[in-house]
Length: 602
Image 1 (cartoon, rainbow, N blue to C red):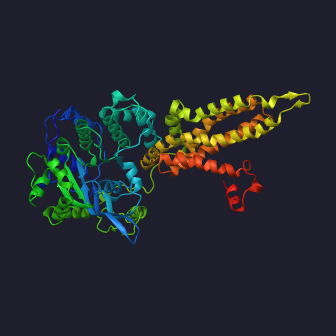
Image 2 (image 1 turned 90 degrees about the horizontal axis):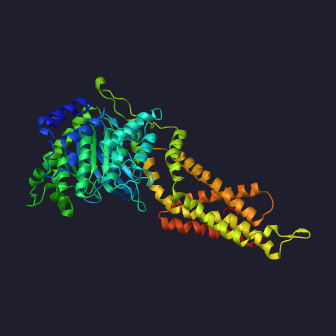
Image 3 (image 1 turned 180 degrees about the vertical axis):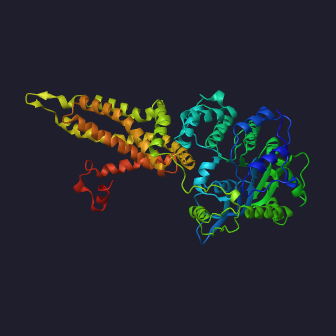
């Protein structure tokens, strides 16, 4: 199969770009990437074109960011981390965002994907003629985090079917969702690893490169027109990194806009980039063709060292603060910045966005997005009119989200020994110890019926006390798994997989359905083994209630604890402190007045 030429690629861009996007002219054509010696086998022209054709997007968006600023801190002493970043990213191109660590690459990606929730945002972000909204971003923008949190006990295929069930419309048939997943797995080289678990620190699963492919596939589940990636090659060897970036190049050639923040690309990876945005200390230091940066810097007397490739030299340059400052000031006075500014103005004029307000420095991220949507421009040309962006994201129902969570996660957890062990192991141990110590003390008979000794009478309150207290201490065993699951929840919420209420209801029901049989067996063993009197049903219901209160307490601590160590220390400390105020160790009337408030709220 023949490769796509530059002219053919430009024609596709101009045909599919839509309103407000200028056609590429011969002066700004993007060269096809230079073929490097020893390139990965995946990057053959036929394979890359197969990916481009299979994953081709019907629509396309040019992303325009104008004067984007971001600051944190108080209003009196703000710390500005992005200073008026202006850039544009076009379909059928893969753009690299480079810069030293802490330069603002990831923050800029978060802003143009509507994921930044902290600090103060200024400027504006457009997708073709429309302003960015969080609702639009969730439907049309795929985001791949640097170190995404994936569910370790699901297989490669299961995590993709799970994500497809949550992200794609509920009205879509299972067969259609299955075909989409199979297509992605086939094109991303994951079909032969479909039944391998994701894995984690305690269980070996997919390799680093395969995990990265899975995260890219998850970002493509919704068929987004724009794909953003934060450091997609971090932690990978050079061969695997080249393979991943060649895959992304194929996705870009499928009429997608691909933007990736990358710190230190290989020579081959750099040759794949069409455009390059260099950010230094929150300011633009270069925006143009990736192959043109050497000539640009040479015009300001920055000469590449012999024996270094362009990307190696650039990485070394960006590691030196003085060089970054010189690059930023050189770009600010260069004809390139003037040409980019004129091109941005042309883009804004063509989409009729001249009246769009630039947000004030006091705008929060939410207000910034809301103001952009309120003042959305009207395309001047009716033939170029686009559909209005949604003000609210299209979501599945809470019931649908809960069903998907139960189907793919609860059923898997209930078959996992680690999950069940943390919830059953302590109950089995406590049951064995208590029954063997207090065996049959409630069944001792004398001439007048039940005649327990004084020690037996004192033991019964101890049994009841331990039965009530142990579930709270046992909940501490949930902490590691809960803390590991928290970043998964954050990522899936950001991806729009479900709302917090759906996840909360799912977790409460999942734990409740486990505690019902566990507490029934535990209560029966204690009640009949020791020989307690009274209603067994009431004894079991009380134990079931206390067990679920302990679980909810564990979830509460896990949701606010900064680390696992803090959570493991906080929960037992709270439970142990509360024991002094339940009226058994210290009678209520003996509790000092200044502590009685605690006994009424604990």
